[in-house]
Every structure is written in C-alpha cells, then in structure tokens.
Length: 197
Image (cartoon, rainbow, N blue to C red; front, side, top):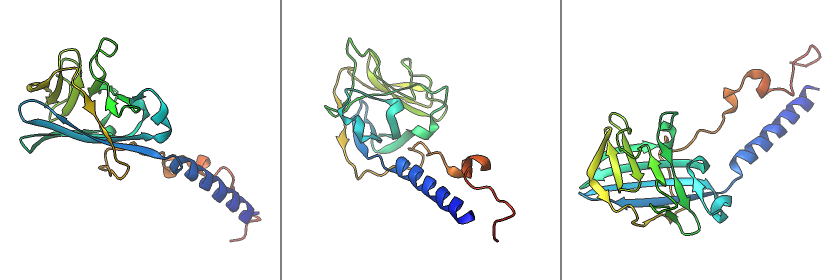
C-alpha cells in the first residue's frame, strides 16, 4: 500500500513539474539610449505562445530587469522580484514587431517601469523608466532625470535572444512545493499501522 501511494505521489509531482517547466519561453534583450549619456539595458521573458498575440503586458512576464548607466558608470537597476503593491508597473510589448509601444494617441503612457508619469516614485536609491506624452526618461533615487529625456514617440526595439540569462532577482519565483502545508504536499499518502518501516 505504501509503495502504491508513493508511486502515485511521484507521478503527481512529475506531472506538476512537467507543467511548470514545459512551457517554452521567449527571451528578449533591449537597450535604450537616452540623453545626457544615459543608457538602460535589460531583458525579459514570457511564454512563447504569446508571440502570436498583439500585445504582451507586464502581467505576462516571467522575468524582467533593467540596469542603467551614465557614461558607462552604473546609476541603478530594478528587477521583477522588487515589484510590490506600491510600484508603478505598466509594460506594453508588441511581439509581432519586436518593439515596445511608445507614446501615441492610442497609448498615452505605455511604459511605467518602477516610475510614474511625474517621475518621482522609483524610491530612495531606486531606478525606473517611463514613456509618457512628454518624453521617454529615467528616474533615479526618486527624482526625474530631465537630462535623460528623448522624444516620446521614438521607436524602442527589442531583440529576441533565447540564450539570454537573467540575474537571480529578475524572475518570479515558481511556487515551491516546500512552501505548501504538509497536508497539501502529500494528500495521497497517509501513514497507517500497516505500513512497513
């Protein structure tokens, strides 16, 4: 009986594992050139099945990070694991043309990556990016960086790169079996007196 229950549990865990890891991911890298010597580089991933959709949004992403520099010196970074209920977070990606949506009549603020339209909420020591009706620009340490601004409608392409690797904080953590309560981990096996030790 114990072996039968253990085998059933192993089969269930194998099916769950296959479901979690079976989806193919599309990975993209990008680089944004701002004014004043500012540059932002980053990467993202999402389920490759979404490639045929018209729009991929922030809620579709499995991994995402951005890193900023000025004249080659680091100025800040942000990653998806830092997302919380107070974060400004909006991402609009157009997979069929491999580019982020930019300002237009139909998309007045298509990107808000840890940065609101005013540019003052990326947090102390924080880093963020925004595309709104006034400009594409950066936020550093809770302050809008006017020098970084470029026109709001300038194209912002991304390049597919399925070999891209991500920093450890860039990805949403999968639900770990160890995080579940014991009765949810092992619903198929309950020890009884007939089990052989």
